[in-house]
Amino acid sequence: MEDFVAGHISPGDENDTVSSPPLQTQLNLYIQYPEDPYTISALFFFFFFHGSFIVHFLPLSSHRPLTPQPSPPSKMSVNDEGLILISLQCVNLTWLKLRGCREITEAGMAAVGENCKALKKLSCASCVIGIKGINAVISRCQAAAWAHDGEEVVGSGTMSVTFVCLKEIVNGQSFAPLMIGSKRLRSLKVIGCLGDWDDTLEKIGNLHSVLVDVHLEKIQVSDVGLVGLSKCLGLDTLHIVKTAECSNVGLNLVAKNCRMLRKLHVDGWRTNRIGDDGLIFVAKHCINLQELASIGIYPTSSSLEAIASKCKALERLALCGLNTVGDAEIECVANKCVALKKLCIKGCPISNVGIEALASGCPNLIKFKVRRCRKVTSMVVEWVHEHRESLAFSFDNSDYEALNASQIDHDHAANDVIHFTEKMRRWLLQQKHQMITMDWQC
Image (cartoon, rainbow, N blue to C red; front, side, top):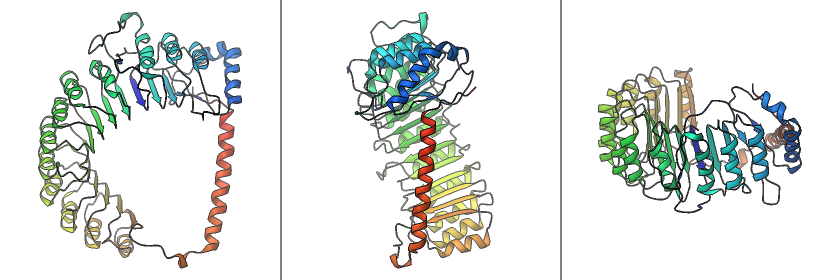
């Protein structure tokens, strides 16, 4: 198994931990499961009587997982019996996605681990299998080379997980051994999980030199955790989103050590802990930066000028909710960001003057979005189209410009409703057709 994604998993036993799996094959199978219980029964019937046929024609490559879809409590859902049947017939399965399958327990997951030795990616969301269910798969997918003895395992064996995503999990810390023990871990996303993550990130930084993609959002992490990540010298992408305890100190160390950084997203959550100092360090050390998203922080012309002057490869820039960015800062970007191709400005105190400067500068700019900038008026749209026809300019100031009800054409509104209803009818027919068919990608 290479990838593991989890979200809304049942807490289970707080003493349970998740161990780490080995490298497997690269086969994939896609089956679309409907919510209709009759269709589910028909699909199981097909497995019973045509299982041998399916096994011989399993695809060697595809792009989608086996995905049992969720169903309301009043309807029938995939249970252990169905999952066991799938595991018996789809022995080459490498990607399993469970979403809202609340009738699946550890028994069904154990069958998947026992029969689907090639399983490479597991995704669970809104399930109640708990940590024991995850371990039931992971421990069995490691064949005879490694056996789980019931104790917490950290960094033992040859671990092959390359991608871990945890989203809104109460006991997310139980997955720490999985992340720390996976020495081939390249991508890590932790979003909205409880607990202090500094210690885990420190250990990951000490053990994982191949980590290239990190996304930390709405979790308890401080500069201590960023110091651990700074030891991942090959870090390529870093998202620090709404982590109130992170400051310029941690970002400075990451920028100083991770000089291969190409994508940086920082949402300071208006805490004013990350600002000019951090961005100046990024400009000084990360000259290969290609994408920067700055949200809810307070940079000035000093840091923006440093970014524009030293990050010559910068192609994508987003400035959102920055009260300190006005026309002067935007003119600096327009004059010095020669390689810039895509720009998004949202909720900044700029005016038509800044927009005109950007349209006149940035020779490689092809896409430009402006949202909720109250000083920008619709008059600038015509000006941009006249002076730079090739630029895809998108402007939306609807939050500040009230819609006059008298200007609405009721006939056109009625036609729009009819058109929408017809599109919805066609979409429902298409979905109904997809529910009773299976798509095999060979």
